[in-house]
Amino acid sequence: MSQRPIRILIAKPGLDGHDRGAKVVARALRDAGMEVIYTGIRQTPEMIVEAALQEDVDVIGLSILSGAHMDLFPRIVELAKEKGLSDVMFVCGGIIPEDDIPSLKQMGFVGAFGPGASTQDLVKFIKEEVARRVQA
Amino acid sequence: MESKELDALRAGDPRIVARAISAIERDGDQARTIVQAIFRYTGRAHTIGVTGAPGTGKSTLVNEIAKQFRRRGKRVGIIAVDPTSPFTGGALLGDRLRMQDLSGDEDVFIRSMATRGHLGGLALATANATQVLDAAGFEIIMIETVGAGQSEVDIAKNAQTTIVVQAPGMGDDIQAIKAGIIEIADLLIVNKADREGANATVAVLEMNLSLKPNAENEWRPPVLKTIAIKGEGVTEILDWVGKHREHMQSTGVMKIREQARLRAELENVLQRQLMKRILNGMNGARMDSLVEKIAARELDVYSAAESILKN
Image 1: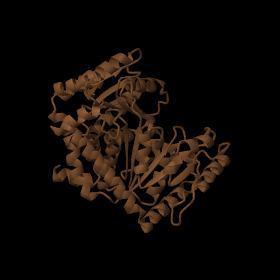
Image 2: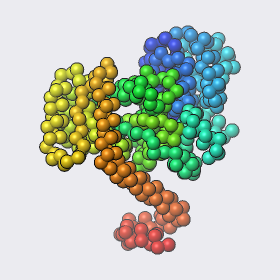
Image 3: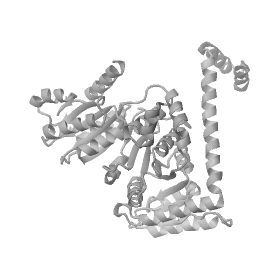
Image 4: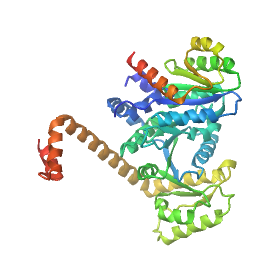
């Protein structure tokens, strides 16, 4: 058995109920050979980290459209570290203003994929980043 | 496996448990050492396979059954198996979506597993993952699979109690009989029982069961109606699961089935280990030349195999 497929959690934290984008991303990632654990909407930071922990994912992808990312994301990243998930890769998507990207990068997000981002770019990015980490 | 890690696993540390399951899925040397370390601590859990066609409400039902077991103080592990796409190698593992009620509970562990296209390897991976959860102290372990392929059906069959879920109006009356899936059921559930045709589906299943002659002391699967989304009919499932377990223990069937399962697992592992050894000991060029000879009809497959084995 060679290397395992990339396992990625796609979650929508907070109260944002519009998940079409997240589902499109989930499908694209599956079609690119990844194992996608889709947790759905209305996830609390605790639920997201618990799922990431149990599923032993390589990547956590957070989707948010409500603008609450600067409130919710730090909590999620912090909780993940607390629970021993400091080596998980964080990416995000949805409505992520350019201005927030530097802060998000500081928080630990390696990529932010806002409106117009192509699923192909996302797939390539994730694969390259995971490969880079494996080598390191 | 270090003893500190083993202790943490046995205490149910989710990170260690999750990593152990990942190692098992990867099926390398680590998988072997993990199973060797934990095996003596397994054999306590009651394993329950839940299978059925897609759309019958299995995940929702598993969620409800787990909630009830939790109310009775049992620690619950759930392995949700979903198909890997044979074309892309990827999988969309969405069963957790139906089990949100269970989140935040330390005594519940949910793991999604993709079939990953291993033939026979899937049964071994789920068996070993179940053993990890068993060693971690989960008393009830539910394994949910889509009963579409033979290997998925086999997994459900390998559990101590097998629950087969049907839903009305899915052309079920014929499906139920054709699939042969009824034969593996210890409990038959007609979920979405508020839908039209529910009683007819129950009737067909009962009729099918009565066609089989029932030997004395043989378990007759109950046909139960549920509305999983409302949690209706679920306590009855738990009661019947308990009855089934008692029946198996008192008739000695539990032991017989367990031994049969472990024998099959031993044979499976033997096959895999032997294949690995043989293939590792062979050089690729020799294999290629044998295959060419077979294609040219200079050699048949059996003779080729003999020549490999003789070496």
